[in-house]
Length: 326
Ligand SMILES: [Zn+2]
Image (cartoon, rainbow, N blue to C red; front, side, top):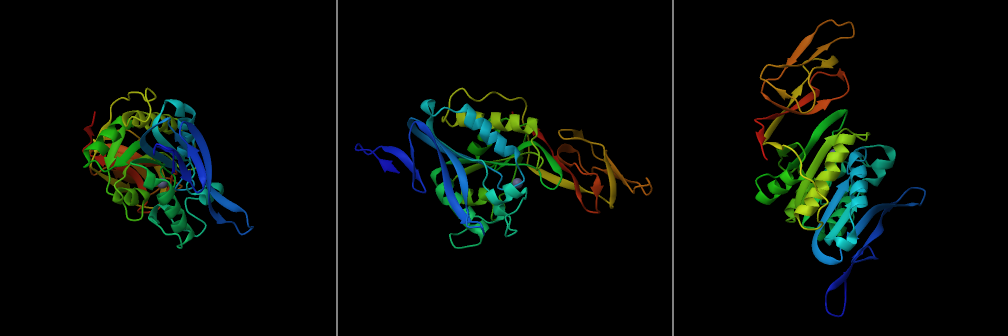
């Protein structure tokens, strides 16, 4: 940080780049050299309001093939205006820069970046990247929104996953306004776990599927981020009120009973009854049909998009005992 004579902070410093108050500064943080010698760097935008206030980050593509969040970040950046902001927004649209350019969930060292936090300066490539994000971005913030999609040919109903036992986190999750909110424990090594340990609140947004732009997922996500920025006082009048929000504290994956070709009979956002048919799996000649039924009533929050399934493959994710959050 750079201080003025009266002691007030007039600029933030990111890896040697000054980000003055009242304007947007784009920063490239060097990560590592490619074998060719070219530097790979982490691009981020710092939108520093004219007056000090809360600092919030938004991040996407920690899994390099989950690109809806990249477009959500772009739309948020288009909407915000530093001259009317109170506080700072740090946008990191492509965290896993290596996976992103290859269309790959993981890093070139095959590690899952979202299992590599908090990382270290001298660890694996994933560990170094995790450490860089944590020290340069997360440590400056009181709140973060991490943007994901379904993986492995699965599409997610737009949803927030967060620690709903924390009242303020639950309020922020409701304000985001995605149609569904799931209480979720943090996973070891995830960005959310590392940030939570540092006392930083995190909302995880999951929507759509990997390698695709899903317009609904993007619209709900951008509107949600702006609503949360309003809620914490960083911006004014950018958010909008959303419709009904459903919450649940438990969920389960329903798995294919056999390998074969699946005809899925339910869709995202649909309510299912106990014993309701979810889909039918058969072989290519239509022989050996197995009917999949839901063992529980609930709400379909994720579904497979690829009809070829193996025995035990996750087909549909059902939230149990869904309740109105607002
Ligand atoms: Zn992800």
